[in-house]
Image (cartoon, rainbow, N blue to C red; front, side):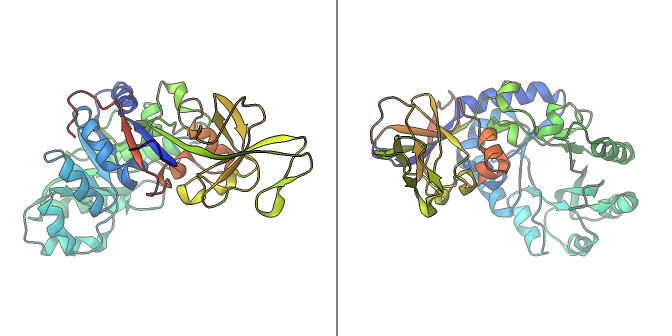
Length: 367
């Protein structure tokens, strides 16, 4: 990439390896299936999977298309498709790419019963209290017996998902764990319940497999922490160039609707990144960025392609200088808090028009 870039997301694979080692330590003896859905949380499946291959036991995605992309990078590694099994015709694609479907409703059973292709490794998703996807716990045993009779099923696992693992004061996780533990003890196949927050709290390491996502990318799944507290390193650094620096007088306004009024004479900068690139408009007049290592407030409304900043305390700045929107020194969790959202959403929303640029490619990487 040339030096003429406007905005970019720098993907630090050295940080990813560091986080993978941290997750391995936290997971104990449980197998790790790295969650790389939503284009690896906005980091790029093609960027993340090759580095993760040597550190995990499998991958989890949301869609068949993601599963196919992941398979091209990981020819032999198990891959679970968590939430796209919605037609009988898809079963041949699952078989062609050795992808593992998740059964979460009784309506899917006839598709497997009638399927005559290669046998598949499958999972049953149990609803233990989240009330999203999953079969009711009262029919799980019967469902296991039925599926094990189908020639379409090679092996069968059981999984569930915690609704409130990131909330330390919530009792819901303990209730869900009790339900799932009871079910898992009746079942000979592999079991899995742990998301990133559960891994941090060592809540689900007693099961066969955990499914960390956000942890891999260096952000905290806990509602009151930043990833750095857990010895995580941010994998993505979102940055843009300044394309304008100007002086304005006290009392002048900035941006659409004049929503910010200068309390003094100010130095205003314009960075060429906006909500079309994935920076949240909700950060208008609330967020901060890093310029020359100094926090600079976002002033005025974030627009489609640009964000205006008060650079009065940032020393000498000029067009072409780099503005960090999140990354080392400015946790994405902070940006999410300023924007009344979560770090998951911010990372996933970084636009395809923002190039992903790799740094610290590990030795022996499969790319």
